[in-house]
Image 1 (cartoon, one colour):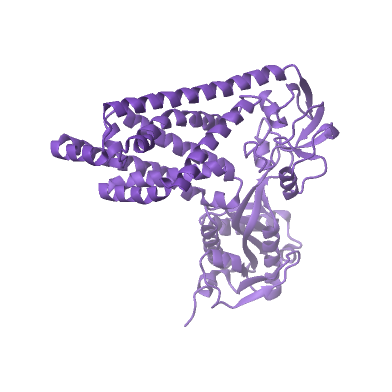
Image 2 (cartoon, helix red, strand yellow):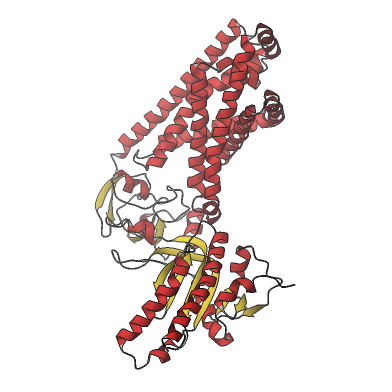
Length: 543
């Protein structure tokens, strides 16, 4: 990853530099001069080419050490693109850096674009740009996708991942048209040749020989990696180990691979969101028999297991290499009907949630027929639920005479804003509903609303085949406690400070109260609002 990050940084600024050709040749060349202060220095050269050789070498080593070629589609694409990069990159390096060092060619963009534009090489180098970028983006995504901050920024990063290569290609095309115009004019053509110290035929022949030699070396290394893989696979067949999966198949696999690789090689469904890097822990198994024959967990595996509070006997399938018979239970096992493994592992999100309850409902309906009770509840929900759904919310569950709603929008700011708007609309809908009840001679309905924002876990919770999607977490408890506090304070709504700040509302001018909620570690600053319909006016500072 360290070598990959160095190369990604270099590629990012290189592509942005190419994109400047959209504006002018001078800006493009000036940016290149600034970049080469670093990239052409000795420290920069050692860092960049060291990272390139290290990254390629480790990739070939990893390929040679694989125990199976069965893998997810994204991983196969990552490897295929990685193998294509050197094939296309060798020529680029030879005719720029080698030409500069050996023949004192001024390999600026004018030289390079003039050299390849309008030929097959222009298409190949454009393809190289896209391959490098896709390869890097796949690597970054599957390295960081388990991180919450990465998931929050993914919409923005996805947009940038499309814009940056597009910007570079448009810059290349624009500069290429200028290059064609320059070489079409004899005077400017002679000027370009003189300024760049254009390599003569002997120099070009020497560069071609160098390109061929490096290409052959790469193919030899690739063949050596493939040969090593085949030899190791033949040797492994002589020694095998039996793996028994609880509620699953029994397989016989060569020793050496990780348990996750064994599962993949034998077509056994085994969840692994991070691709077997020991980060997500979704591949963890409970070792029921054979644990004593496994190597002790590494420090990295210990940290990952401790982070999820794994029970004794839990191990990561991507980290253990069985050498003796083993019986394991997959904690997250895909279900043929519902892909239960993905849904059941849960997803962390930061969002606003709303608890609502009818005040005094039990006393109000005592002595009434069940039909009348249900009829009143359905009329009430018909009146107020559209206010939630119209603002992007969804009712997670109905709780007798109340409900829990969540606002699962792209980010926490929009979630908070949607929750506040929905609360105001609920208040307005309630007033209209109570006017209707008054006309019928029935008492009005009073409510309490608790509004809070924080981390929640979404997932399918329940038995396989009967597990509705719901949310759990401390945020849910806090929102429920806020709703209960509205009765003590004699208000309809309590809005926590996290909701207000996430919505971009300053709280200094508001009359906030600190509430100690049962089951919540810290006091929760909240805004108390007498009527839900007055929420927006309560948020507006008064002069």
